[in-house]
Each structure stands twice: as C-alpha cells, then as structure tokens.
Image (cartoon, rainbow, N blue to C red):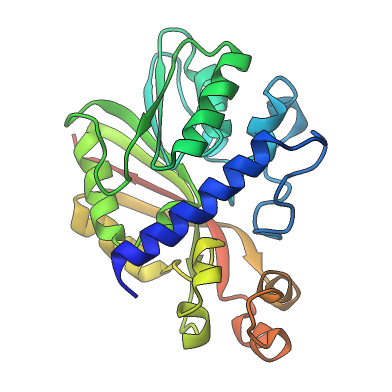
Length: 269
C-alpha cells in the first residue's frame, strides 16, 4: 500500500468524523462511538473535561492522556501532532498557562474548523492550530519544549520521518511525550493489511523494539515505552467486528500483542 493512499484514506476517514461531530445533536455521546473502541474509552478524568467544550471531548480518538503524563509546566511551548478536535491542545493550554503556548497540527480542514470552534468556546488565547502533515511540521528548528500526540503517529506510513521532524522542532533538552498503540511480537498479515484497522488505530502500530530503534535513529535518548493498557482477546473482537476478518479466529492470536503506551524520549542538550 503506497504512502499517498494510506494518507488519503486516513484523511478521508477523519474528515468524515469531524463533519459528524459538528452536527452531533446529542452532546452526551460520541458521533463515532465504537470507531476505536475499546481503545478510545475512559481516557480522561471528569475534572479534566468538565470545563471543555463537549465537541472537543467527544471528538477524541486517542489511546491515552499525554497531557497528564507529559507533566507540562507553566510557560512551556507545546506541539500536539494530529490535534483533531483539540482536546489535548486545550488541556495543555490550561497546564502551560498564559505565559505558555500550544500548537495543534492537523492535515484535515474539517478537523481544523472543529478545533478552532472549540478554541473559541474555551477562550484559549494561548492556542494556535496549524494545517500540515506530521511528516512535515510547519515550525522552525528548536522551537518547542514538548511534543505530544495521541494515537496519531501509528497512522503515519513514514513514522521515521515523523520522529525526525519531532526531534528537529524540539529545543535542546526538549521532551517527546506521546500516547500511541504499540505491538509486541509477530502480527498476522491479515491485521497489517487491513486499511480499516489502519485508520482505526491498530494496523499501523509499531513493534516496541522498532519504535525504540526509530527514536534512537532520530537522535533521541532516554527512550521509555510504558504500557498503559494491554488489549486482550475480548477487546480484539470489538475492533475486528466490522473489518471482514474472522474475529473469533484472529482474536486469540492477537491477545496481549497490542497495547496502548506512553512513549517518552529526550532531545540531548
């Protein structure tokens, strides 16, 4: 599968999700409930999301809570790769305060429209959303303190380039702190070849050792991959349900091989 085709399918999928979010009548439910279940459920505490716009909360398709795990400090400059509806950008903006700034980067016009609406509703003056691809970040070298992301890097067909770009824009001593889906051990070809699973957070996931190696190759040090949720056979059946893959046959073979993780690394001083 070509890189351009993967990118286009991801873009089309997330553009449609953003459009559905903007016209969602019931603010108490996600416009795409089940899309990435069980990966994208139960990630945020209510005290984090109570003051955010409903559409920012329900437009989240992450696999973790990088804003909490990254331990952001007042005055820091943060970049969120694949910012979607803006939930992690808005949470980060609260943590860095008025002396800090948060950039959100997304390639879909529909997501950027939704994110800017949520920014206005939240009154977040220290936020700026940028259009672009995570493989080509539209920011100068050594310009941000922290790079975060929430289950987006696994969607890229050129993850090595994403990591090199993250390294480039980080200041010396800057922190890479992302939530992502990671794998352990051999994954069946049926999973790797399924585009539905690619745009749904699973098929493009890197194997843990490969993730570590790519971060090191980009120049990072102190790499740490901490599992936050391991997916079992019952979980696999949920996200295999609409793919055309025999869920009962495959689920037991992927049991424990996919997990959400908080991935950290440092750019040397």
